[in-house]
Length: 104
Image 1 (cartoon, rainbow, N blue to C red):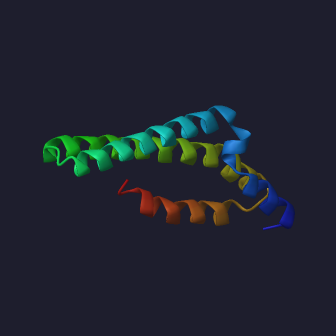
Image 2: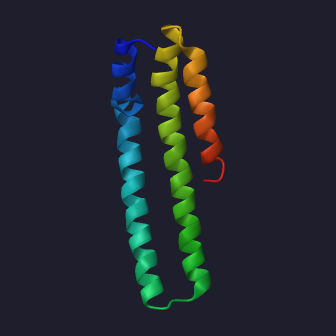
């Protein structure tokens, strides 16, 4: 990839999509709050099922966050790379990353 394309891609899809950035920030703040709540529940020796429900809630939020960032990446970074003739490289990178996200 050209240096100019790499610089443009480093800025990232969230920079190009302020709504997605705001949504991602809101989601991660919620995740942090929930995880702090889970920590407190563990310290207080709360009922395991209640803790598991909160863990499931965090997993759902992380999935939403991953989807939000993925969509922004595809709409900005992937589109830009394809326009610059580097579609195969960026798609391969995305497919490799999605392998890790399947469990989220």
